Image (cartoon, rainbow, N blue to C red; front, side, top):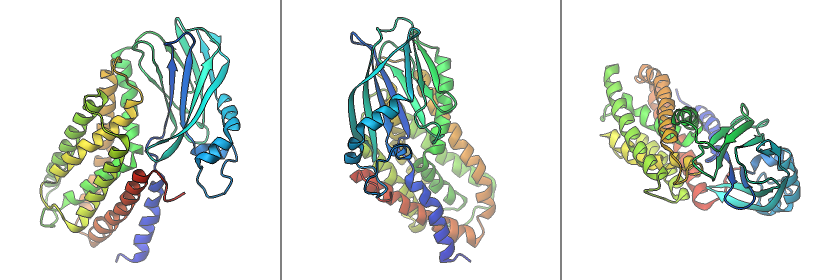
Amino acid sequence: MVTPRHLLLVLLFFSALLRADILKENFITFDFNGTTPKVLVDFESDNLEKFIMIDSNKNGILSWKELYAKQKEIEGFVLKHIDIAVDGKACALRIRDFKVYRRVHQSYIKLALSLDCSLPKEAVTLKYDLFFDVDKDQKAFVKLSKGNVKPVIMSSRKVTVSLTLQNPSLWQAFKEFLVEGIWHIWIGFDHILFLLMLLIPSVYTALGIPREKFTEVLKEILKITTAFTLAHSITLALSVSEIITINVTFIEVAIALSVLFTALNNIFYFSKEKTWIIAFAFGLIHGFGFANVLHELIDKKSDFIGMLLGFNLGVEIGQLAIVLALLPLLFVLRNTSFYRYFIMIGFSATTAIIALIWAIERSFNFSILP
């Protein structure tokens, strides 16, 4: 029997997702278009509190006022975690500008640095390990503004990279972003919850009757995942190539609302038939969400085909892994009251609450929970 205690445990477990970062990546952009090299470093501010006493009022939230008050300490801390060499010569770094800004509903810091080196002729070497030791999920995307140099991805497993001014192969870009696509779907809790909200009713017919054959469930899942894949692939390509551009905040709010709708649909059955249509419609929105991370890496002059194909295929592989892992279990449990009340109603209700909080946070640029 499902009790209020069971539902409370589910709510507490999934409340951890409320802290899910929309964009957890850091961005490092080299600018070699002027007379001297410059670099921009963008990073989320949350982890700074682990090293610098910033939260003066102890409310669990780092305000812009508190961040600006600790500007010199933050700048000194960042400089200890970044080293740059141009054509084998170490460069002294000088901070030109410090800015706090919003990226969806998170506070980010942008540091503008000047290098005392001349413009590169062959290669740039970067060592960067900001927060990698305390947050293994941190990624840093590095790109050069000169030429068609493919961006590279840094992590706790790769803290030093050498960027040549030659354009790497299509295959190299494809492999690197294939892995990133898989990882992105696995840490994209909003995308995962949307997928789960589509999966859990697939073991029932439109009348709410458990499907008798596993092949029937597979057929339904195939329609749903194909529609979702086709839709987000279309808008991912259109958005990355800048044929269509939509406000990032609008997309993130829309993604949260798509999760909310599908969760409530599992409880109240707004749409009982043709779930694949819902998957396609909201898949168009999620495609723009997937594109947000690539927008920071790709400019119009870059040959981004390898990255686009690799990232999109990586998303599909990550999505397929989730489906293959859960579908047999869902099919086995479909006839139980546990599934109907604890999964269909309890889990969907919890997801609806999470999605609603996400939508509010992303709409008004603040955090409900510290």
